[in-house]
Structures are given as C-alpha cells and as structure tokens.
Image 1 (cartoon, rainbow, N blue to C red):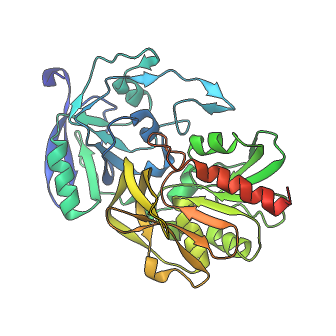
Image 2 (image 1 turned 180 degrees about the horizontal axis):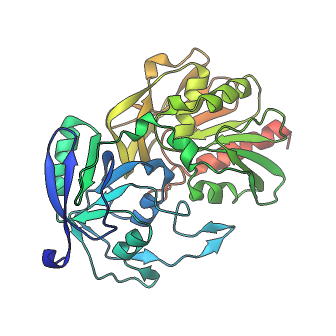
Amino acid sequence: MKSKTYRKAKLILEDGTSFSGYSFGYEASVAGEIVFNTAMTGYPESLTDPSYEGQILVLTYPSVGNYGVPRTEIHERLPVGFESDHVHISALIVSDYSEKHSHWNAAKSLGQWLKEEKVPALSGIDTRKLTKHIREKGAMLAKIIFDEDIPFYNPNETNLVEKVSIREKQIYGSGRYKILLIDCGVKNNIIRYLLRYETQIIRVPWDYDYSKDDYDGLFISNGPGDPQVCVPTIKHLKTSLLQDKPIFGICLGHQLISLASGAQTYKLKFGHRSHNQPVIEAGTNKAYLTSQNHGFAVDDDSIQEDWEIYFSNLNDGSNEGIKHKSKPVFTTQFHPEASGGPTDTAFLFGTFVDEIKKWKGH
C-alpha cells in the first residue's frame, strides 16, 4: 500500500504509546478498548461479530484484505458470510492492507466496506510490536486521531449488550422443538447451527421476561462487555436454573449462567481472540481446537457445589465451560459454531437438542 495516497493518522494508547498509520477506512477520530485477534482469515465474520462492540481490533496476520468482502446473500433471513447485519468493531488496525483483492465471491474491497460502514481503519502499523505491547500491559483503552483530539472511552463501563440485542421477538424455522434464544449479541452462525435440527428458534431481547413463555430449551448467546451489567438476564436465569429444562450458554451466555449459579467472573489480561484455542474436556483426555472471542472469564474457585468444570483452556488454564451435576444445563466459553474457525465442537448443538428430546420424552 502506497503511503502517499493515504491520509496519516495516529493510534494513541492510554499509557501514552503512539503509532502512526495510514487510513484506508472512514476518516474520523474514534476511541475504544484495543484488543488483538491472531486468526489468519475470517475478517468479514470477525468484524461483524457483536462481541467486538466498542473495541478497536488489531489483526496480527500481516496482510489483510486480499480476498475483499463477499457479496450479500440472504438465507433464512440471515446474511451469508457475516455474523450480523453490520460492522461492530470501532476501528481496525492492520500491518499491510491489500488494496487489490481477488476472490470469486468478492463484491467490494475491505476499505470500501469500512468506509460505507463508517468504521476507521489504519495500516502501516507494526502490529507485531503493538500486540507484544498489549500482551505486556494487558488490554487497554486507545483512540485513533485524525485532526481533533478526543477523550478515551471505556466500553466496558456501558451496557454494550443492550446496544447490540434485538428490540423485538423474531422467529426462525418451524420445527417441533422450540428453543428460546436470549439475544445478548448472537452470532448468525449460532442460529444457523440450531436450525440444522428440527427446531424453531424464538429470538428475544437480552432483558426479556420469558417466565410465562412456552419453550422446550433455553439458549443464551454470546455478546460484548462485562457480564455483570446484565442484571435482568441474570435475574431471569436464576429462576430458570430452578427448573429442569435444558439450557445451553455460549461465551457471554456461559458467563451469565455462571453468575446466576453463584459463580464469579473476572477480566482477563488481554482476552482470548483467535480461531485455534485448545481446550480440554474435564475427566477425559479429549482436546479440541476452538474459536474464541472474549475478555472476561469465570473463576474456577467460585463454581458452586452442584456444578463442575466442563472445559479448560490448555494455554492458561482458564475456565472454558461448566455443567450442572444433575440437570441438563451446560455452557462453553468458546464458540462451537466457529465462524470463522475450527468446527471440532459443533457436536455440542446436537447434544443440546438431544437433551431437549429427552426432556420432552422423545
């Protein structure tokens, strides 16, 4: 990418560290929490993942944009190749932006897409140095400055889930098993996977009171930010956990179920964001490669007596899932739907539906 054809801008971290780069996206100053993702591919999926709301995303793979952005196709009322209907990151940081893209399904360049979505993006930054700095200091606040300076902004102090959740109930499919999906920022691929079974998905807002609703299984989705701000969701889950209906939670959903069960969460130093995070299933020698995107985790020492560890991270030992000892309730911190990333654990959706069938007596 030729720097002389692109406007310069600065990336400034809250500890005073700064980097100079060249804009290939929307040109406006922006602030948020800076995090990194180590995946080699899958930027259309990552950029549209609601779990990245409020974050400035650093992609560690050196060259980004070479396959452009796919054309928009709709299936089951969901855009194919994207995890929501718009870009959720606050800004994008890459080392080298590939201006010329080539792919049979490409409709536009990455830069064009980001301009349309009004999302700033910088290239020409040493992302290896930047990532090493974040790994040393931990996830921190940052801002991109073009002309006027702006204050830092901590997205974790706001209710990001309320921002990304739907406002009204939506229904997908017409199968015999009704799954109530609490949308805390659900990825489209979760809905796609659930629809592979004989299901009907009833998608409701994050704070929806479903105590009088008719459903066969409860699913709590992924989402952004600190799980402890989701007070209404946790309150409703506490009531749900007193019943025997099957419950499955992914990512933020895992953290919310854990909080409702009496466990505690904490903020990770720099989070887990990549396509090949190894986890191990408790009580077995089975290890799986998983896709992950989270900045908070459940404290193993706070897990209550009726619960047990389901999965653990093989890199740092952090919790990757819990399950109830007697009820059909289980969670994963990682993403079994893996978009993008490995699909080693996609069988867990089948496990969830099997539990619903058992509960229904089928």
